[in-house]
Image (cartoon, rainbow, N blue to C red; front, top):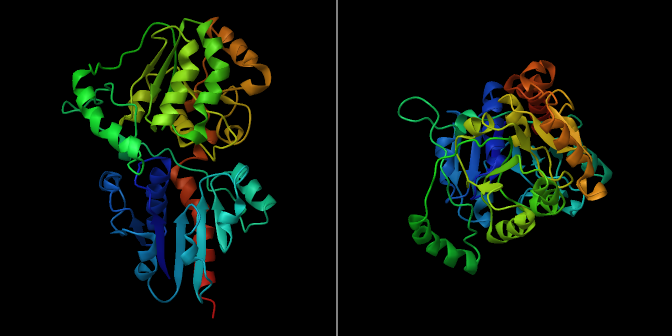
Length: 383
């Protein structure tokens, strides 16, 4: 059985981290991977793919079929398979990892698949409700920090300095123009190093994408934070023009300087360890939240909405705190939690929740893949 994965993303994000540890886990199980990638995705070189993963750049979706070998094949896409690859063929397993919930989306994107591997129970439940062939055991994920952690020449963590908060979409004319002008503006702006400020530090460590719903979140939380000037909001991540603009508008209720943008950073492990709490986005469009898993692995507790998928990844009171969806109570429960934290409520220590953290270890991930590999081999050996 040969195995081909498809990830044609040109921007680096959690799905690319996921692809990396997925290939590493398959390598442990004796499955070599041919990975079809976008030709402009230069980040793969530094992510630590295993030696038995062959990477092939594919310029156009229409070129994908010619890169698929004949014979028994386990074909897997990160996200739905392109339509041209969904036709049934003998000894070919058509599969995908569902990195997004189908709730609120069109489930027809996953038609014509033999297996769909959900990353969480929240994603699985949506697939099953839509009548799709979801694998019963969620894959969950791994705190894949190593491939993205840079070190300084002295051996310590690299400096965290302010960078651009924009991740330009080169398919859009506006973004191409602004992206061309931004380096000139950035050259004239200071790039200070990050340092903690007195008070309680909440951090966002995430791409500023629509699925996180940060503008909607802070439409409710910004007035609460404004009443708590001892709380600092540090934002590590970048996003498209509209995402950053809408987040700026939602944060306009804060006093100047209470929220600071630091742009996309590579050494996320160092960032997590300098936060009091990681703050998640809103839940329903989120599939898993690798940043939530990573923060806990670094010993940093998480503050998240009390809803799936965060109820799968955060152990309330042990690895963080869950609070009521602020769209239901205008942030009242979040305000209560801030008051308690500022009054000295004990900070959770995720490193003590060993059973919880073990679910997100690489070893546990390999074991969850073992029956998937056996199933793929059995499927592709059928006459």
